[in-house]
Image (cartoon, rainbow, N blue to C red; front, side, top):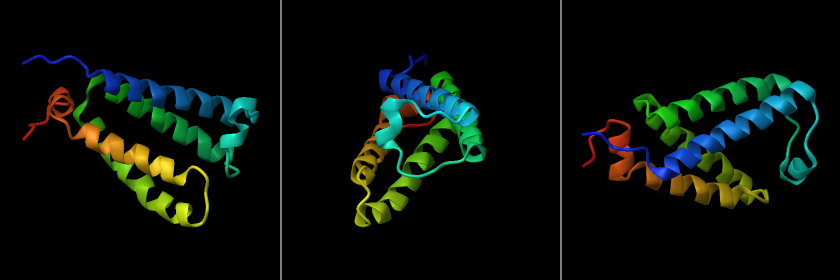
Amino acid sequence: MIIGRPFLITLIAVGYMTTAIIELFVGISGIVPNFLLRFITSDTSPTTLLPLALWQATLGIALFKGWRWAWWLAVLGAYLPIFTHIIGGFRGEQWAWGTILWNLLVIAYMQSRDVQAFFGREAY
């Protein structure tokens, strides 16, 4: 059965690729665009940003193409920030609870039948 790419998977994949482009720009140039200044909460070195950008670009492309392993990485990549942001939320980080909510929504969406079918997984 051929199934088309779910629309939100396309948005998530484009989001990963856009983030990767911004991280590559910041990592290489060292210049942070003004519209991102209020979102940056820590100093991240280019040695951290460049591998992260490559990772996110790879995941974005894999999600866009529907590769099976990308489903697992997207789900795992949504679970891990939940645990780290719970601690940050109690420490008063401004965006922690929104990040937790977003990742819970991603996990719920990745469990839907049409998304699992797109990635070649059996949906129960």
